Image 1 (cartoon, rainbow, N blue to C red):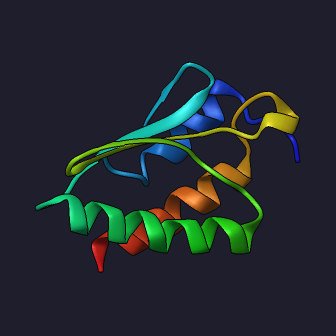
Image 2 (cartoon, helix red, strand yellow):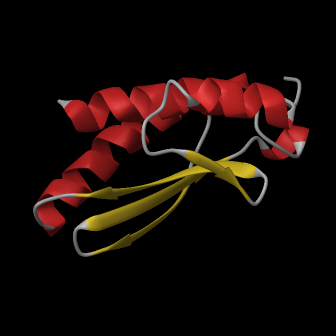
Amino acid sequence: MDKLSKTEIESKLKNLEGWEFSENSIQTSLEFDNFKDAFSAMTRIAFEAEAQQHHPNWFNVYNTLEISLSTHDADGVTEKDFKLAKAIENIVSE
């Protein structure tokens, strides 16, 4: 999969509220009502990530989940990252 240019990434980010391009990845921070809700979302995201064979870098403390997506084989952001980001958005909006 080909690495996207900064211009392509910024254009695609217009369709993902709360995501930004930083440190060669697309990133977001999500806040939930409590730890149980955060962990539940992480579990659903984990199943989707496994189905897509593309796994996020993430960090969780209590009700906050920070997610960073990049494609290591391409050394940057690709369409795979945007596909997973959109799936994550669908999961957390349920």
